[in-house]
Length: 196
Image 1 (spheres, one colour):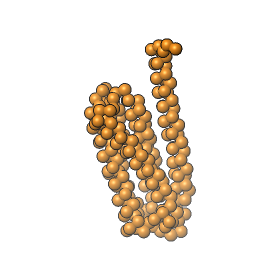
Image 2 (cartoon, one colour):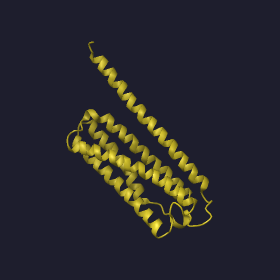
Image 3 (cartoon, rainbow, N blue to C red):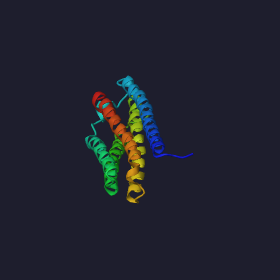
Image 4 (spheres, helix red, strand yellow):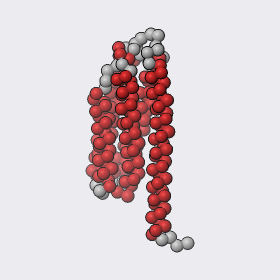
């Protein structure tokens, strides 16, 4: 069978569409999972029989939030650079994204350490502790997955294995990252604003 340029192009479009549909499906599934955890947090809010309460122990993580939301910009710049063929620049933006995410995760870890050691809030302390650690921990686990993916892509960029032909794949990872950042806005609003 002879393959024409049109056939090859059509197959590429089908693969691209399948990848995009797959990522959209993943994001929808993960959004549903987060929705369950958010509803559980809101449902149990204020029902703890013993302290501490969110108002007593939580403060808005400003630095972490700024870093995580800024990382959406840096990952978009990485995709843009790769689309223009600037693989090294893409790698630099990916490194910046990872650093910003690590600052966010460090802040989350420091908050948890403080809550556990100084405030006595564990996952088993009360309903607030259970739902707080479940929701924020679910988000942190997604950030970690994103950091691993972005780090791998960054390594590929620095080793020259990444090429501008891979821009769609990197763009799909950036979709996941934007989703993780959008979820943080919801978590921040529910836990640190409404929940206090």
